[in-house]
Length: 523
Image (cartoon, rainbow, N blue to C red; front, side):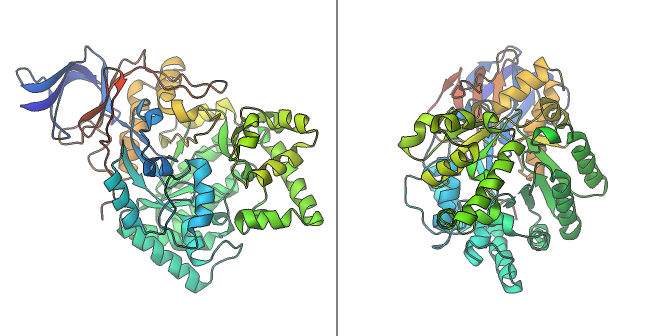
């Protein structure tokens, strides 16, 4: 007798094919049979009544690193139908860590994820993944190795190019992480010290990625005026190294760059036609979110928080920093377009949910001075929302055949709604309301496409023998409820969510338990 039988579902297999009516049999965490399964005995029966059954969604850009370590239930992700997450993004991962790198990396990662309940400690990729497996996880999780981790371990927090010996050592550390199960490397080329690299360094690390048949995931060097040059840099890395390249959260920021997405996508297609293994992910909103420190010039952050603290005490250097911050604020849409999402200290929490313009008026100073003072007071740990994207550009990228979905969600007092609503929004708004693509294509973008890209065998499709990561819902009820004004709202409308054959949402109710698996890259 099987464990579960889902009967009479509209099955969307994840591969983009038209849906079919049928039944799904689940046993031992796997899909064991599909089709018309009359007379099959089951311990539990679900009458689907024509509801959609599809694979669980794969978040290609997650910042849940510390949430997993802290034992979070990840309810905000489960209610979206996410059953697998890829962490270690933007050049920053929680492994490998050394005694020297754990401090700077904790300062970078905690604002994006959560404050670690335990002490940060040095460990390699193997020990980190073993630790996660012992803790148990609510959904499946795989990780990348951060470029910042490699640089900090070998070079420290300095703005310099590596020597040949240092570059070789970074490659060796990367190879060890890949052998121990990391899916690839992530680059954060706007975040120091990853941003201190040159193209030759990236090509060298890309060759290591290629040797292990892994993937290079990149937050490009510039998503504003220099986006074309940044994309051309990654094309050069792809040509010279031969590795697979995935672009994180593709976008064109700043009003003067609105309308450039067509040119960007032409370059992506050119790379694809050349045989370069390119793909990209995107969140379905016309606003971004990242650290407020992204307003600072990279050179001002050499040495991290301590380095900035010293520089702002030097009048001429301070003047130069303020000038560059002012330019970047305007490039990102101006102070009215920047909202503070979270801070470190209780003293400034009153500013969350307010625009930089409003805070500047309250403090009676310029927006660049306000931003810098906030960063100093919070020791760089400030997250902001930037309303700096074009809806038309978002839609143009959304319909592209190489597009996948990543939430890039960052929790906080007043988060971006993508934390709670990314995946149902693709279905409810872009597929159903806007009619940009059929439901089958929306689901393919969030299931088989990322599974194939990451070589996650047995995930991302409803097929016989696959892991039973399955969603059951009515398309007219599954929707995002989070908004920019009221962002902390769980998605609604999922009736059932299975992770490895065990329900984590049952009849619309969240269940306790940790059914996820720690996924290591198959070598």
